[in-house]
Length: 85
Image (cartoon, rainbow, N blue to C red):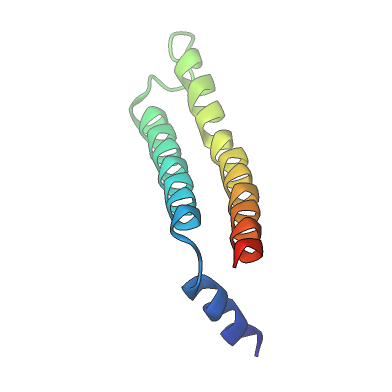
């Protein structure tokens, strides 16, 4: 029963909410990939590579906050769309 309700909700989302959700996921994936690239091809844990390590660490933690903001915006937009119907 809950599964069908969730599928109906996903099927009926507004276009603006979909674009917001898709963009938030794309930005989060991009930041995670960039963090991985910095960690793989950086100088490692040396004095010269420490700043790139700190940047990769920050890039790794940013997607959580971006996804949280995206979900809050998604819920607000869907609530507004439901009230306008």
